[in-house]
Every structure is written in C-alpha cells, then in structure tokens.
Image 1 (cartoon, rainbow, N blue to C red):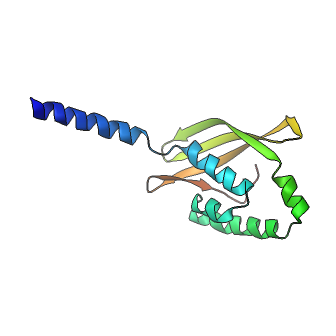
Image 2: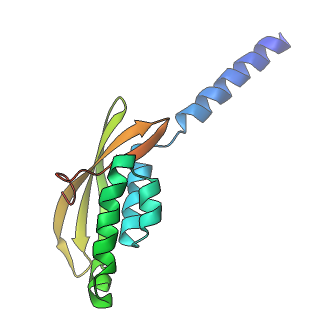
Length: 130
C-alpha cells in the first residue's frame, strides 16, 4: 500500500513540474526586455539561430545611434495581450507605447518556435518591427 501511495505521489509531482515549463510569453517578455535594454547578447540567446543575424544588424544600427536617440528608444513600454500556441509554434501579441503618449498604442506580434523544449523568438526580415 505504501508503494502505491508513493508511486501516485511521484506521478503527481512529475505532472506538476512538467506543467510549470516555460511558456512562450515568458520568452517573449525576456526578449522584449533585452531589446529594450539594448542587451543584444541576451536577445540572441532567446532567438532562433536564423534570427541572430538580423539581431546583429539591429545591434549595429543601435550602436550607430546617438545617446539621445537611444534614450528615446528606452522611453517605451509594452504589455503582452494574447498568446496563441499551435503545437511547437506560438504567436505572442503585445501593445507598445511611448511613455509620453500612453494612449497611442501600437499592436505588434512575435513569432516563437519550440526548439529542444525551449521557446525561441523567430525574427524574420518581413516581420521585424511588426
């Protein structure tokens, strides 16, 4: 009887732990925070291999900006509004706005794919900045 109870307890714990896996919005939030802080090394860790080249281009662009332009970029906020998961693909929708204009929100999306159990942001030339 003790073994049966122990086996059931182990199964319940394993199910609970597996349900706590990373969610696409967790990766999306970390990615958006990294980009906002100009931490492209962190953003690349959260992106697919193909996306890393585009992030390197974005990093070069940001490095060419004046400090004033960088400060303006940092005056933005975002809020994740929806997540749609379809197997190993997800779309995270978020609103973005300037702190000085909170009523002028833009809706954007991030595409994510699950690779080896981890969600990665998939940035493509056609959807970058959308």
